[in-house]
Length: 192
Length: 224
Image 1 (cartoon, chains in turn yellow, orange):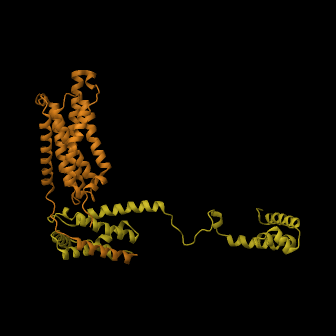
Image 2 (cartoon, rainbow over the protein chains, first blue to last red; image 1 turned 135 degrees about the vertical axis):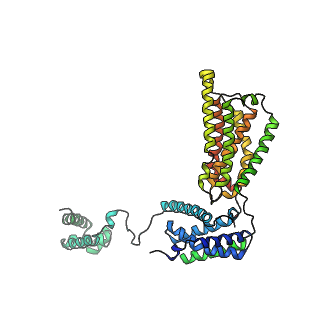
Image 3 (spheres, chains in turn orange, red; image 1 turned 180 degrees about the horizontal axis):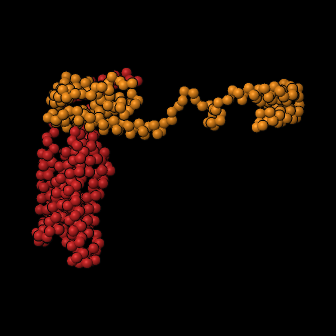
């Protein structure tokens, strides 16, 4: 959709008006200068937005153009059209801003609203929930001793001593049960 | 953000309006180029008067290829100065930067013609290479005041057309300096002229182009 600013290219009458305002501004007329800068700003904004899609960058470019226009205002010859002079300055500042944008985006990484949890791509792939259900089912299908070992040592993250105290099973028995449980889970979930 | 950006732009406009002082529009570029050429003639005349014209300069000038070489350098300098003052203005076409090309073509053609004449006259000995730091250094030294005067006159080109302006400007200063050096230093094989005069011109244009931002920064208009 086009913004209302985009249709603000000046006609010949407006160019003559701007030229007269700029000539008055060169003479130190503040009111004329304010009117000129206020009138050209939407036109500059439209020019900048054709090349710079982020409104903040376009606005920075507009401000750069205004600053340059101010610092070299004596290079404008009131006998010549105003628009080519203005557009030449604007193009230069817009190109500078595009260069800055390219340099900045080269160092930045866009972050999605749904951030990744781990660097490895597999961890962020779809089907995570399905894998979790399958694992829980496989654990539930284990013999009671092995299931208890997995629950205490892996899901509750207990040490062997704590698990031994909690379950009453000896440490070697828990180790064996855990070993067998992993083997069984591997068999149940691994590649068929 | 956009609203904040617009507000900042409005604040900037208020600051710029408060800062405005009357300025006189620049004089037409051709007049300013002529003014710089007048300065260049004065500087070159002073240097040549201090060192003295070499005795064989007028004799040498009777030969076609010296005439062409000198005219080529002179034409390059004048056209490059006119080009620099025009291209420095934002609303003048960039094609002004091509104006010195006919002068450069004549200069290179005359050097090629001179090399051929040297070959016919002296055979392979006419191509003997040597070191001519004197003319190299002289071109650089004469170019210095000319370049400073030019940069001061073209300082407003910095924000918009720095590269084309400085390339033409340095070409103007160095080509006219090469003309000046021809008047007090000679007796060289044309190949040497190509290497040392051409080398000095290329070095100045290259350095000017490379360090255009810094050079214009020395004479930059004051920020608002």
